[in-house]
Image (cartoon, rainbow, N blue to C red; front, side, top):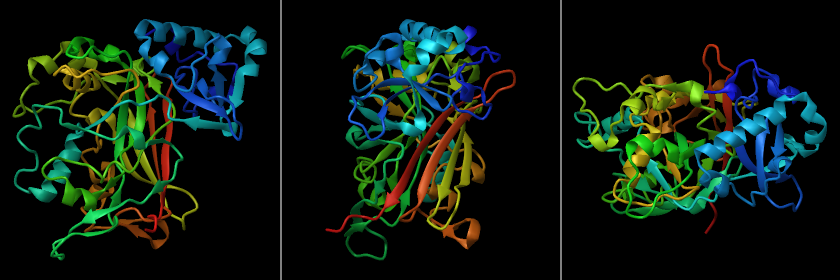
Length: 418
């Protein structure tokens, strides 16, 4: 850590000094924006309080995405953070810099990087256990779970920024009551409480990334909602895994919280029990086991059309991830797969060990058998048209300035008529 993490550091942007702000000067996450309602070019910016600082203040022209910044590497990221921190904390810089500020309320935000490839993993062991128990009560976790970070390649083209409406997907589904599958709108639409890892520098095709250097390939973290049509998924996933049940939309938060901003909130890797094997050597690093995970509070909120405000339905923590971000990166590249700047690797649903910490409706409603009670007498087994689902995250620790991620939100629209 360094001077940019000093909890006493203040910004001349007053809203950044509010303890409730997600974006104090100790955070400085990166995003892409333009003035709302304009035809301006998209460009890179940094969230500070309720404002966005245009990176043009530093003479930087990022273009429509942050892939060039992501590719620059840790040394450049650290220097850029140092300069931004100084610019936004020194009162002498206020006069010449404030013209580069735009209120977030007047900005249109975009997916911050051009995502070339996206993989979704299954690192939440409690989610894996809960969902496995529904289908295999006596053996919920498959034999490979403790050995390998399980994942699949998803669809990058349908990843959308927070606030983008999500159209209910249609597809094939087959319940036990049907002699053959039927086609129609999903009846079991779900969310997944996830974290995404934005790749920085990549690796050459055929060249693995060693576990000890894997963290250097992660630019930062975002919130991620892998919307899931559970009824479509149950019919189509065997034997090759998720497909159309996942590819209709995934929501990402607009701000990339950098690894350096998260430094004060590092924690140990998931504590394996004595009956669980240690990671294989290519996934094992002493430093990563000691401080390779992050203490990030994760929350999901639901607002129906009848509710005046959103109700929290889940509160989990990223420390429940069984595999660290570095392990996920090292495994993805272990066969020589070439990662590229802007690629996104998602954690999978991060549920906790208790019912209130479950990160999906599938778990919260026990597969639909125990509908979730909401204010006003409403219940939900799965998401209905008009529901808004909001993910939030925040890091808090004694003696440290808290930082947040903003939101990853989406409202369900009815399926399109055919």
